[in-house]
Amino acid sequence: MPIQNKSAVLVINSGSSSVKFTLYQMPEETILASGAVERIGIESSILEFQNNRGDIHRQPASGENVEAAVTELMGLLTHAKFGVIKSKQVISAMGHRVVHGGESITAPTIIDDTVKQIIAENSQLAPLHNPSNLKSILTCEVLFPGIPHVAVFDTAFHATLPKHAYLYGLPYDMYQEKGIRRYGFHGTSHQYVARKAAVCLNRPPEKLKLITCHLGNGSSITAVKSGQSIDTSMGFTPLEGTLMGTRCGSIDPAIVIYMMTQLKMHPDQIDHLLNKKSGFLGVAGIDSSDVRDVLSAMQANNTRAAAAIEMYTYQVRKYIGAYIAALNGVDAIVFTAGIGENSPEIREMICNGGHGLDKLGIVLDPIKNTAASRTSSEIQSNSSRSKLLVIPTDEALEIARQTCVLC
Ligand code: ADP
Image (cartoon, rainbow, N blue to C red):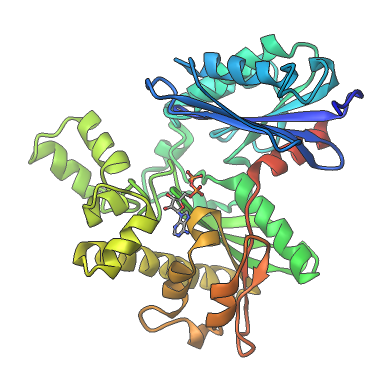
């Protein structure tokens, strides 16, 4: 039964090669429809649309760009067969994921000309994401006029980082005049799982010290004290931190200078190498950046695949150790995102690899770890001083909630 009253909130997440959306009935937080266009600009681009009656509709997407993909997806909301709303009038607000808000936007914000200007200016800091985010906003403003459009920024949750955590050891002008500092990313996910952890533990967020590990295609780890981010592994861009699917993570910056001066590489080549050819893909060398494939190769005695997995789990373990020091203890460590939610092997290697974490009071229960399902689960053993939690992230729902707060 299509909903009639103005109670739906539409959340949209547009990247350079995909557009995803979820339509919620609020405040019930019920999903009415969701969908995506993947591989935008590629011939085999596919549109997928799913409604709350269980229909899944797939069609080749004509989406040659973000604007076309958004228009095509949104058209299906009122489709005679698959649609879930009678008219667009039932949508009361729209939440847009925007990657980089820079220093000037540190909270969800109703989009006006100034906000659009700031998103455009921050494209220099997030060239893969902010331009697509802005194109999608402009398209949606035309498709859905007269309702509030809210931007929810990946960087916003990390606006509470103290200066000693966000400054780099560069001349101060580089920060003050050029904005070079740690911003942090995946903020919406870290915020969602940190809140959920407090609910699962039945404790007020103000009383908790958490380490949230968002381990997906991109990975970042955050220290959360009293509900606020106090340090995070990604930095000026999402390249810093652990190695990732195709990103190298933190490296000695002199390597980049060496590549330029000695290897005569162009900045574009270096950018491509660090962002697209490194990480699991580059180290394991098995033509896949997917951890499932790297784990299979490791099990088949591929030593480079084993090295990549050991590097990754060692690096996550080191961040956990560093953030226990930053927080002076930890009540719970949260694993989330594609790898964190789905891979008991990786969680096990993070906690038990090397010399383990038991001397820091962190002990995994192997049976609970293997049994952890797609709902929130505790996976620590009885002797563990800190809790270990697996919590599925839900960035779209967090954006819907933050949109509702403003509208
Ligand atoms: P994104 O950063 O693109 O949102 P996700 O959080 O969806 O990424 O994580 C995607 C990654 O999660 C995949 O590339 C894959 O490496 C990993 N992954 C998904 N399922 C599993 C699994 N069962 N075991 C190990 N890794 C998994």
